[in-house]
Image 1 (cartoon, rainbow, N blue to C red):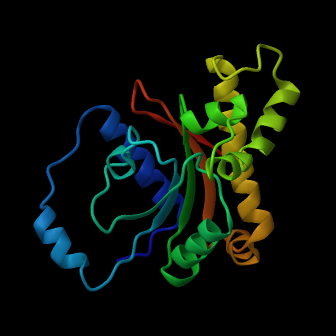
Image 2: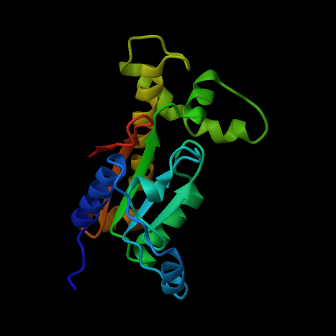
Length: 200
């Protein structure tokens, strides 16, 4: 069987999302999949998603056990540990695609905009501040956490910032992308429709 290209993998995710949004998920034999994946894995995509429970990543792309790597962290930003995980997924396990997946109405982004400071959450939310600063430059409305349009603008900038962090802080992934071995893309999940808008 021909090895899929990064573009092939991206198209698979897009098709899977169309099926999810149209409520056309197929019933999978989970027990069989558990047995088949027990001794190894070879997912073709790695998704960095928010912690939010309303974004069921595998279902969103109509994927099952062993199909995709998923790293979840509140605010779907990229830090050193996530970078290492993505390098493992691509360099060691041959994933062809990295997707940074933001979503509408993100509580972490709203908290960062509001300047919430409590416990370890303070440091976590500081990772979103560059996206807020970028969004503020071009946004002319109310720059507040209760303004859905501004939250959406920050969400998009946060996805773009995460992609930039990957490209600037991981020579391994930067080289793989330059050589066409992987593709790095962003997307935003719509809570009301289930659709993902891809940013490229």
